[in-house]
Image (cartoon, rainbow, N blue to C red; front, side):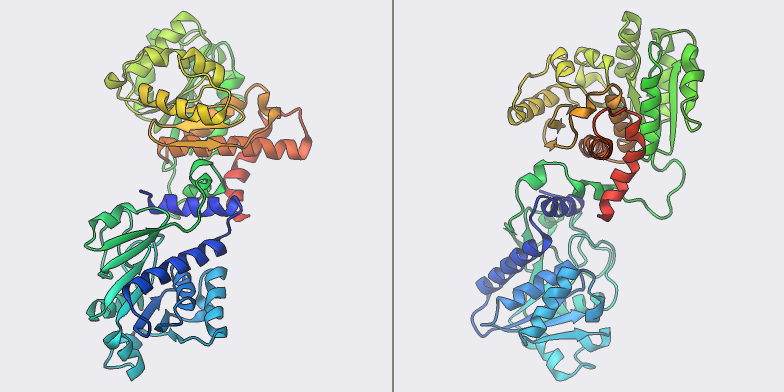
Amino acid sequence: MITSDRMAAVDANAAALGVPQKQLMESSGNAVASAVRERTDPGDRVAIVAGRGNNGGDAFVAARFLEDRDVTTLLLGRAEAISTEIARDNWVALQSAELDAREIRDATALHTETSDASVGALFDDADLVVDAIVGTGVTGALREPAATAAERINAADASVLAVDVPSGIDADAGTAAGTAVDADHVVTFHDEKPGLSELDATVEIADIGIPDAADLFVERGDLLALDRAADSHKGDHGHVLVIGGGPYTGAPALTAQAALRAGADLVTVACPESVADEVQGYDESIITHPLPGDLVQPGHVDALLDLEAERTTTVIGPGLGRSEGTLDAAREFLASAGGTVVVDADPLRVVPDLEPGEMDATLLCTPHRGELAAMGGPEADDWRSRADAVEAFAAELDATLLVKAPYDVISDGEDTRVNRTGNPGMTAGGTGDVLAGICGALASTQPLLEAGAIAAFVNGRSGDSVVDDRGYGLLATDLLEEIPLTMWGEQRE
């Protein structure tokens, strides 16, 4: 089962792994053609109703494979408005092959009483209608001429085959915001979409050649989740609380700056008053909340819980140290927190002491392999073996784990991702603090598995950019300016 957003990411990841969208569209179209052949005989009349996106492109390909059927393809709109290059290329291929393909530039052309006889006859006489108007990436009510086309398809006596999802149906919820195609059959790609189980239709899942690696490895397609609404307001993308500092000041400051660079709107650092001015001095955007004394202690927990309740995500650990009182405070805080908490550095060692069923907080833990072993977790040199073992340990802890290594493993106990960005220059101190800050920002807007996976990719890719540009000798601060370029610049490549 795969959501529409995740499907878009996997498509893009496949391209990044060397399987271009053009190849996937060819395979998708062939799968649609095979489904049409199973339900029709040579010479049967097939009407394809296609939109201007890649869903329509899949149908243009299918039409080329159905020359032994009487196929007419109707494009809803003008050919010059086809939205992607690969779909446009496949429309041109239909013209070059002199197959019957027509533009429907106005919704009135779809009504029998106002259209020419040939268009009306397509629906009246068709043995099968293929719905390829919009795919999984489009939600909300259908606009014209798509809405009229859906009504015309539903009024036909022919059987209806939908490409990927019936047009007008939300692929994730199985609901419609308005008119939707009532399909008899659906051929969907790669994996079933959650909403298809709600339909009264047979569903066929077609393997179109997306490699398993596109699901497993974090790639630039995962960055598609980072789009922002045009009407966003301050606070919509998170107010992160960082609990850190005392023995160290640079670590919580790095975490805070990384969270801001990764898109958090606000960051507050709760730290001992002895270092608060120094932490705030790293950047004007950092808000500090001084705590009495030189170390975080159990007496601070109530105040920290009050702060946590008003923030979207908390990061605990950077620069805290491992004094007995500080670890007691971390243990008490984690046992009582109610939101999302990223656990880094020394407080990781108290996580196994907590009873998963008694915690309200949801945890994203970011250990390196040595810290994982100290938590009682698995030791494995091979990343494949480690992935399986980390998944089992995450399930045991009832937490999401991001295990840092040359191949980072991210797992919530059910699903597992692997990140391959990063380089040996990132052994420099502070890069883990930067990663924790990115996790904090992303956990404010994304599910924890996705937050950890994207954070690992962004942190590693930022480090790769620094080393490619300057060589080794990387400082953790070098990563900060690269973070937004990686997160949003990657989408423009």
